[in-house]
Picture 1 (cartoon, rainbow over the protein chains, first blue to last red):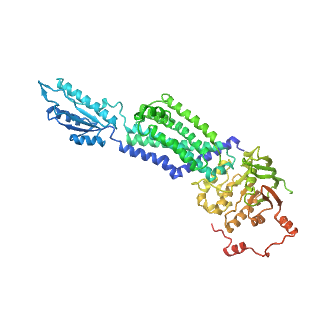
Picture 2 (picture 1 turned 60 degrees about the vertical axis):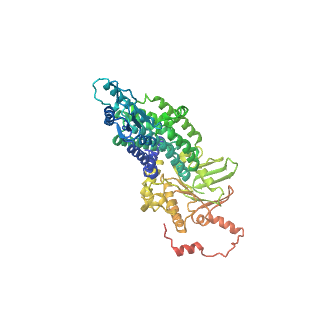
Picture 3 (picture 1 turned 45 degrees about the horizontal axis):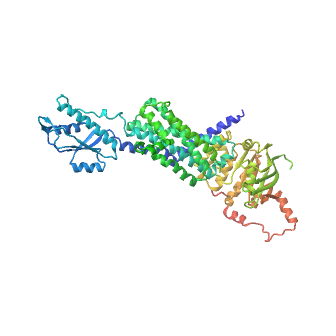
Length: 371
Length: 254
């Protein structure tokens, strides 16, 4: 039976996709950048930040020698989320400067002293480093609660001092829950922009594209095969990264959230591939593509809240970075993982991604040239 | 020509965007089963002519008919019927020869056995190598193998022997003749006259975008002698290449 033209093209598409996947998996540098590199990142950051977010480092300087101050000090030390060191005031100041502690607590000499039969009102001073306000403030809140319990105790209410960290942290999320969706988004961006742009340009410069042009394959099928390869890679990459996060570093991704998480990865991958194709279609060689690819992806790497939250940016910068494609993707992935959001809940981010996808596809079509 | 033409080129021109006219109206026909050579110095327009015929480059004016199909109107169908070897043969890295031929099978929706093809071009023992690991001559043979995947009526070879040593060149001549014996028409470009004389049934000599002579090699030589041509040097019964081949042997060195 003679295959129809449509069957022929489908067979060609399948053949090219299989070949392109084989090449991808055998290409060491592509594997390094799309799989090994992000995994390494997750492992390193996962190990580095495994404990720090759930525990605060507290320096305590007790300048009082009353019974109450000792009780307060030991109560602080009993809080599971705290790692408390008793140090001199000078040492505490140094630690703060060096970021070796989140909070420096000073118990003043008059703490717990009895005046007129009642303890004198005193303030415990808690100082934190303004460069890292989150941990300091969080720890400060716990201490305030503790102080509240103490006040109750002093005023007569019989209460054993127990303060739990739970009240302060809104959710039991750690840095990995922030970092991992960001890393997934970043890897998807790099897979899209770099692997598409440079993979495609090497086809151009080596003449392979021309050799394919000499066969009856439709150019669209060639592009489709390239795209399919990257989509498969995006799924593999996302599953690996999220899997490692879940199994080894306590990344929170409920079973029900895996599907929207992967769907998002696919959509994001398609958007960044369109950007990659726009660059590759326009550029004549690697030298033209490299700076453009860098200019597009480098700022996003740092401005889209992949490694650290954008909360600390000045408002104008926050406003601008709201509209970056990587911001949409990272925020959406984070939302799905951290809050179990459905695709409908994150529709605004999806819309943003789709708009970027349309703009980039249009650019890719307009800028394309075979040679 | 007694046989029906497989390729009919009628007054084709190529003018580039910058105004340069690379091909200035050439016409010729190639019969089924012929080995047809397009000769000429670098820049004569050989490759442009070939690429216009293959449907890889647009034709400014004129027409090309291949196996009864108009190349401009039905380029894809023409490409299904022909095999094309480009001057620079790049292949996907990290795929071995079997996988590459499998890919070409897919591209042409064919199921030609890769090992059979490799046997035809004497590369069976390189089946698991990548194209990069091949020598120049082997790569050209492999490149020709990729043109045979779709059992083409005609194959186009653009300077197939450029850069090869005399042994590899002779080996490739053998392969081209073998392909011709199976009934495939071969259209090739070269700037080696000896090659054209040995291989081609007819040759077209191009210069500055025009065909300045078209006939069998023997007729062209006879016509020159008839015009009273005397070679500058004494005619020797052998050439330096004969000496080279005699001394180094005919076996391939790759």
